[in-house]
Image 1 (spheres, rainbow, N blue to C red):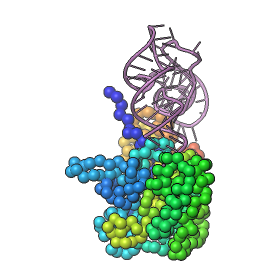
Image 2: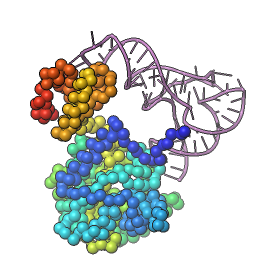
Image 3: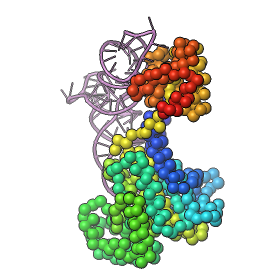
Image 4: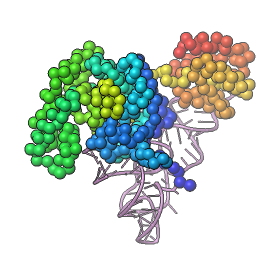
Length: 418
RNA sequence: GUGGUCGUAGCUCAGCUGGUAGAGCAUCCGGUUGUGGUCCGGAAUGUCGCGGGUUCGAGCCCCGUCGAUCACCCCA
């Protein structure tokens, strides 16, 4: 029988790399928790219309990358391509905005886009995101950015940068887009590019060809169109980032893939990932909630790509901290020791120590090898002699130094050492 | 979705102008009857991605297909 294979474009994480994935994800989530964000757990599929209206029909994400199917009741369902629309739906549906504002939530999980796969670009990918809803203060913009930045620094990443911009409010963008279209109409572009420009003129700023870049150099810049209010908001965001000692650069030509962004927008880019360099991005979406039928509250959030951040960590050789390793591995010698070891391991686990032990009958050498492979920080050698005297040999697997411990005080001793 | 490259042992790869497969690492056993990560010896492991074609003969050539990867597109 033929072996089954995973569907095209999915990434899987299994030992030993899964530990690394887990470390990255938990670090990102931890940063959100430390800023007061609380978990919101949502479905991975939603009414297709939610994304069409929320994300925007003109975006590539909606027009050609969604996993859409009909369920058994004939409803059109779509696997979520991004997180914000679903969060908005849930906030509106359950009136989460009725209480104190802002509502601050984080989420994590799988997202789906039917693109041609590449390293760091998968059809099922993993994001950690946060949303802060119902507060317009520029300080919250900086806070959201800081959650991501703190997480990256905690991971030990260095080779990344933050770009920020302001997209202005809806009327501003309308005025600007009109001028931009007028400008583009004067350019000599090939058919495909013209079509792209018609769909969304901002996209031309992202073109990688030098000719197009040169042509676009003379284009009007959105930031020159900002209202007094938007400009001052953006100014305050920058001051706040300065206060936080977060480095950034202003990218006046940033293009975001989703239609709902207004005002502050940002992107984290890693320099060691080839063309899939975006490791996270987000921004304000002040009209979105009203557009989806809720009250007219502002919002800001981000999505971080865990798959790509993991790749970035590997590219930079970022290591996993010790507290992710197994703490103790028990090596029993002989039948009666084995029975004692099973119970001892259970006691230690109950007491909160991560513990594993050598099963089977591989002999001491084999069991020590297993202890080594487990990555455990300590090995506890438990033989007939030791049991008779109520003791055991505790070996530090890094230094190779071992000492005798009494089983009765083992837990206290471990606590001191770990 | 468009174009290029690649697909051989669990992993990384070698395999000359077509003559039915090899290395290193990992695994297991032993050197060491109570000590891993070093060293030495030994063993096991493959429908050469899959399907078809050309040929006396295909890992190698041709076609298709699936997958990965790179660039574009797009983005996390």
